[in-house]
Image 1 (cartoon, helix red, strand yellow):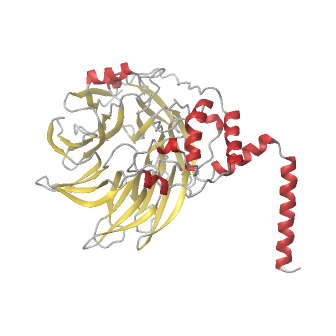
Image 2 (cartoon, helix red, strand yellow):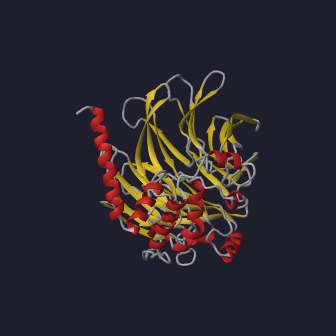
Image 3 (cartoon, rainbow, N blue to C red):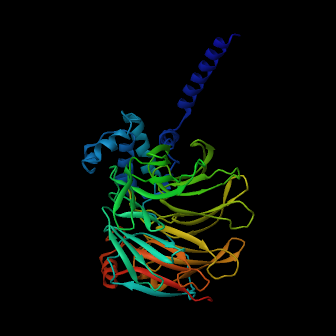
Length: 499
C-alpha cells in the first residue's frame, strides 16, 4: 500500500471514529471536551470548582470570551483609550470559538461550579516572640512599592507609589529622598549612583511608559532604557562575558508585556526578547547547569502563570524549559530559590495570592508551597500552607538553628475571618514540617513587600515590612481607617535572638 493510500485510510478511520464518538457522547461530556479544548489552550485548564458560579458568570467568563477574540464594546469601554490598540493587538483577529462552542463552555462552567467557595483557616495558636516590632510612623504615606537592603553601605532603600525613592540608615532615620517621574519598582546602588526601574504607571496597563533610569551622584535622572511596559524588576549580569553588564528586565504589562534581555554595547542596548507574554514578575540569574554561563530563572504571573528556566547557550541564545505551571486563578506572586534539603539542587518556595484581577474572592488554594528538585529539574510539592492573598515569602535561618525558616506576607488576607494573618512566620522543625506563628502587632498595615537583612548588625536576620494601604480590594472601610490612623509605612521586626 502506498503512503498516500495509507494516509487516506487512516484519515477515513479517524473520521469514522469521530462520528461514532460524537454519536455516543453525552451532552455533559461534550461540554467538558469543548471547555478543555479551548480553556487549556493558552494556560493550564481551570476546573469549575475553583470559583463560585456568580464569579464565573459575571466576571471570569466575559473576560475569557474577550480574550478569545469576541469583541465586546462593554469590555472595550473599560480599557483606557491609550491602551486599546495594544490590547486589541494581543487578541485573536476573529473569535476562537463559534457561538455554539462558546455556549457549551458557559454551560460547562455554570453547571459544575459551586454556589460559594469556603475557606477554612488552620488554627494558629502560637504568637511570635522572636521579633520585636518598631513601626516607622508618619514619616511618609504608606504606599510602598519595593524594599531592598544595601549590605555594603548598611542602607535600606524604599520606593513609593507616589514616585519617591527614600534612603534609611541603620538607625531607621530617613537620610535622603528623591522625587522621580513615576513609581519605582526596583533599585540597585552602584557606587554613588542608582539604577532604578520606573513603572510609568503602577496600575495594570499596556502603555510603554516605563523604563530604566540612572540617578547620578548629583541627583540627575538619566534614561538608560525607555518605552518599557510596566517594568517591575530587573537584574544586571554579564551574560556574554564581554566585560559589560547586560540587563534582564521583567516588563509585566497587562494584556501585553515581555521578558527581555538588553545587551550592553559601547553605543546602545540591543533587545533580545525571551518571551513576548505579559506577567514577567521576577528573575534569578545564576549558573544553574554548571557550564560557566549565567542562566535565567523567571516567574510569569499573568494568564499562563509559570516558572521557566532559560539556559544560556551563548550569543544571547537561550533554551526554554518549563519547570512549573500554575492555574490562572492561582495568582502566583513571588518565588525564591533555596536548597531546603541540602542536596545541592535548587528548590523553589512559591507564593500565590494575587487577587486583584477578575475573581476577587477569598481563595482556599492561595498560600505558600515548597517544591523539591529531584536533581534533574523535576519538582515535587513537599509542603504547603493556606494563606489567602500571599504576596511574598522569604526563607532565612531566622532562629539561627541551622535550617531555613519562612516569613510570609499577604496583601489580600481574609479580612473577615482572619484579619491577623497578613504576616505569618514558619519555624522549620525538619523534614518539611513547619510550626506557624502569628504576630498581632502586624495588623497596622497592608503589606505588599518585605525585606530580610541584619539591619542592626548583631548577627541575626531582621525583617522590614512595607505597607501599600489600598482602600477596598477585600478590605472594609474600617480596616482602611485603622491603617491610616496608624499610618505605618514601614514596620521593622528586630530579631531578639531567641524565641
